[in-house]
Amino acid sequence: MSGQVSVTVGSMLPQTVGSGKRLSRLLRRLRPRAIGYRRLVAKALIFLVTLTVVTGSVFQGSADTAPSGKVSKAAYQAPPATGPACTTGAQISDAASFAQCPSFFQDFANQASGPLSTQDFNFYTGNPGVNQEAELYTSDSQNVRIEKGNLVLEALNNPQQGYKYTSARIDTNGKEDFQYGKLVIRATLPDGVGSWPAIWMLPSEQKYASLSPATDFTRYLNDGEIDIAESVGAQPHVVDGIAHSLAYPPDGPNRGYYSQVTVPDNDRVFHNYELDWTPTNLTFKVDGQAFFSINKQPGADYHSWPYDQPFYLVMNLALGGTWGGIDKSQFPPDGVDRNSLPESMNIQSINYYPYIGE
Image 1 (tube, rainbow, N blue to C red):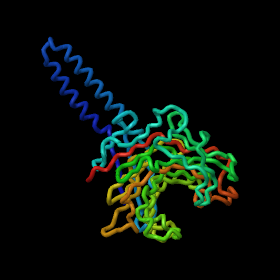
Image 2: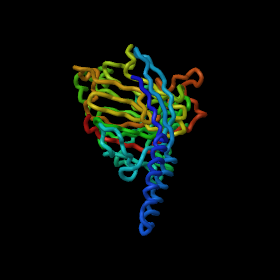
Image 3: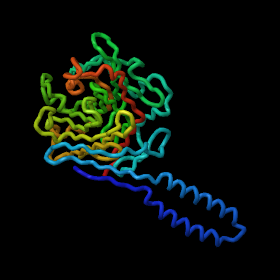
């Protein structure tokens, strides 16, 4: 899939100014006794023109995926945070297939600094035992907290229980499920060597797990995994969108299940990482610009399309491991640059807009 987005908000300005001239002529024709009304309308006109000038910025970007399964990297300029709000902290969606206002949202910018509430999130503690990750996940406020308007997941050089590092992983399992819709997470992703931040989704019910024996290592792929945004510090500023399934195993020859986008300042500037999910399509975006899309094929079953069931959201900051620790030659033994720590993944907001049909 390839495409280009180019919207010039400022191009509306001449039309607005022209309309202002016509309205001014009309105001001059009003009778003197209407002078108060004329002044009021004139002030409103000045405000509208000023607003158009202020918001008349240009947003340009591109999103390209190379043919034949090859991956290309798309560069773009980041827009500011979207708005206005539907309710406090929520952001309006302009996509016709999704609800205008979110049914689930978290606006950390308007939350007081302190511990993260467990009303909507779970803390994962311990080591996941997969991917050879080098960190111990904790619920300690040193590793996960709300601070200065952000949800902070922080990785520390802090040996505990035989692990060199501590970090954080949270999820909405059992508290908030998502099936179809638009999910937007506004975040920064660290780029220190050895860091492995991820915003991803796992199936809530594991609808197809029983179709394979429990001893089958690839059984988890029966129900799929959706990686909305994933990156590693050894490949700085490159963000991956991935749709895992049995048809596209991680070690298989087909690379049509993922793509990448270059985000030059993803470690220090907030960007909107987005999944648009319908019954027949997954589209991955950064700041509204698509960089990867995968479609359900006719007759597809769970082997290639397990995305017909509820998923929950996971956000974590791993260290080292099979992907995050690929630079072991420069930073032995685990591929983590300990001098880059602490590293943090910061989340500003989460907005979920239910799917309402085509």
